[in-house]
Length: 261
Ligand SMILES: Nc1ncnc2c1ncn2[C@@H]1O[C@H](COP(=O)(O)OP(=O)(O)OP(=O)(O)O)[C@@H](O)[C@H]1O
Image (tube, rainbow, N blue to C red; front, side):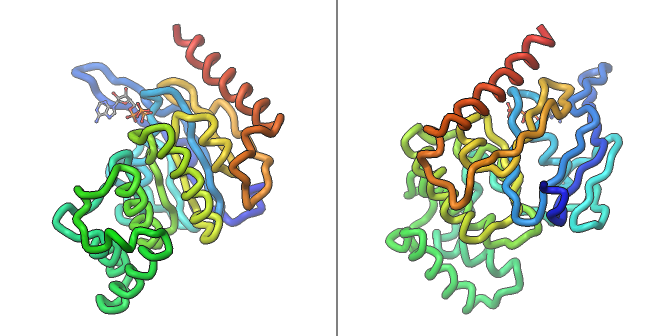
């Protein structure tokens, strides 16, 4: 299905190993995947399977040993500054107010300072954080900081947004709230997203497609197309197909774990 959609990001044959002392430790083994225009794609895999490493390669912070990274049809292996990245802990400038954290993201896209300030206030109103616009990030709760951090990534308007377990540090209720919030905001804007999570439910709730990774050295165990319609309802987890897919992913992850014991 997704091959009909124009690819924003395409990884082919990515291999990466690190040296630990004199020992070469393979982390990624021949990974190929793609993210189509306006697609929400998730990577799920056990801890240490190389998901963050993959993001570092896509972000150009490191280079793969073999393989190619292509964005919008152009090879960009090792090039920086092409993605917007949101890590587990909110990445905000502590010396800037919430509003200035947002407007500075807009300025990087070429928006004038005056226009950026106006748009930042408008966005903060839209996500109901206008009451903290003048505050500094440390005053905000974890969930609020992550909303601001997501908004920054969204407004950078890079070709692809890479979200690395953005809700992992939040409590269960805030996390569920954030998932609903992200779903609404993303469905209104449809950016191309590559998302990492450990939560199968989160992956099924948010994604168009899921790549299930094996333990390191990671390979793609399976690509799963998530069949639920959009706009997606939050009660999708009660759908029998949801329960079935959850079991399928869990089995894959468990089999992957067992194969290295
Ligand atoms: N710079 C490095 N030098 C040596 N080993 C590294 C380096 N970076 C990562 N590794 C190793 O590569 C493996 C994959 O790490 P990575 O952080 O990419 O996994 P991950 O899937 O993101 O893990 P988690 O889900 O726990 O965040 C780990 O064994 C890690 O120790």
